[in-house]
View 1 (cartoon, one colour):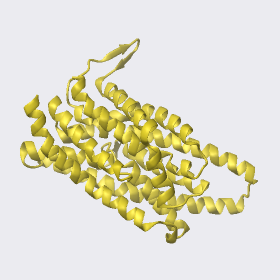
View 2 (cartoon, helix red, strand yellow; view 1 turned 135 degrees about the vertical axis):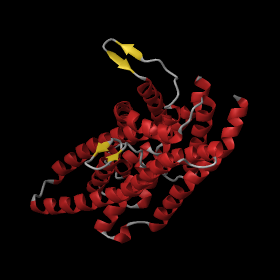
View 3 (cartoon, rainbow, N blue to C red; view 1 turned 180 degrees about the vertical axis):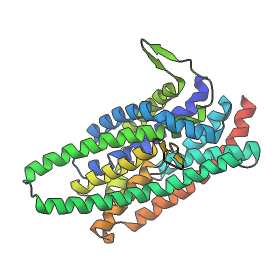
View 4 (cartoon, one colour; view 1 turned 90 degrees about the vertical axis):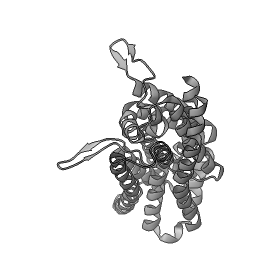
Length: 336
């Protein structure tokens, strides 16, 4: 069984390496938080967020994928991981949610030839959430920046005190962002195994840990390894190359991103409809925040070439994972 889980662990490493770094990207690039500190805090809160909020998104993608065997889960997770690694090699932040869903679509096309009506309906909700996430993050960052600028003019603060508060704010926002990242992205790592009966519940005194949280813990540890070993390059790509951010802007970018990602990591019941927990892209939300800040500060501060390349990665990554899954699923089924 553990051999079949290895592709999920590999995917967790690649997600941690390429996506988790975005949580502290602007703080590290602005020089307000050291890389080593960012790694430790990001790892801790990503695991905690995954354990608490991860199972909800895992259930959503698990139902969408409908994967019913370990060999299939292995091959679909591997397809998503290979797509992420391709983008890592290019130094571009991508959406792990899009590679995961793209791989699941490839599986559905191979096994059934098309997507069923329930899957199509859920896919529509997923795509809508993907579209809204960067827009909401950009709008939030724009508004928060304008409000912060107005407050700072009315309430001047000594530079030393301001610097201390900004460092504290960046750390707090980064920890919140890591929590949201863990809760949101655990589905992208372990949802392939969500419908399989792999682990018996663990009983620890009065506590019972069901399989979804066992999977979340396994995926969280894999992401921690990715954060520690390979996240620096992505941090600098987003936090330094896309647009230059000062400490205030870095705080706003992280906070806006975390608010949006955390919102979509939970299910919401409204009067006429329900929004399920839908994994969205942390990197898309962050780039949306940075873009909103760029608009607030002046469009000329944004390096459009970098933004264009990132958007290309977002479009091509799910197509790559779809193709990988379509090719790898039959191979895994023959070897099983």
